[in-house]
Length: 298
Image 1: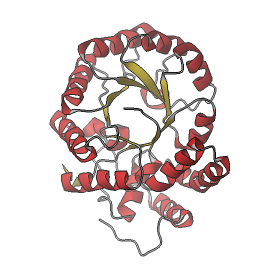
Image 2: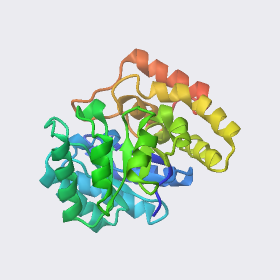
Image 3: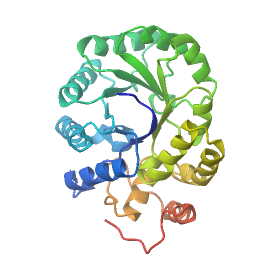
């Protein structure tokens, strides 16, 4: 299944400390109905670090059940333990995921050779396509284009979620890894620019609350309608900024709660955003046109 367009890095709704399974599945269906072109359960936006293994498996299963082949499900499978990442990827494969999203190992700070061996071990232990998640801001380490090119030679290392913010990387990566290596940005703010230099789509935080607009921007670009794509991009930019006014997924979960999509609930060490940033998020949501009625919290 092709990976392209607006792909949502899904929030995980909680209710009284537990995964709110019904609301999560309703949320996944709403995403599909709104035009989202792919789904990522159990990424950072889904608070995967605080999910138990059983909860992680369950959230992936619930997403795949609703998606039912209509859009690809790229399951978050990363860990700074290679053995744990293998186990999560093996579960995603058995569950029927389209691919696994595997973050570079955080805190351990492996060398480039360590990165290569980490991904190769996951690749060799599973049959699932793997997308590298390169996010130096959270993982400290930055996979080089040269290491990525080595990994791209393995048949099931199929692409990258690039959250470096470096718009010069896509053409360099394409030159080293080839046109078939799928490049997805992890930065909402550079999604349109990323497409223009060879990217295929965006794994998005903003699309949790603006799925139709995000999908329409990608669709307009794919049709060659740059004027529409740019107009939507300009409309969304303040929202992209607001979604990262504090550590994600704090702002986006607050925004989703304003739309009645989830409770405003986290697991420690994440906490609600400041009152000032709550007002900022709400004001931007209204300016973008996402909040037109009185706020109805879930």
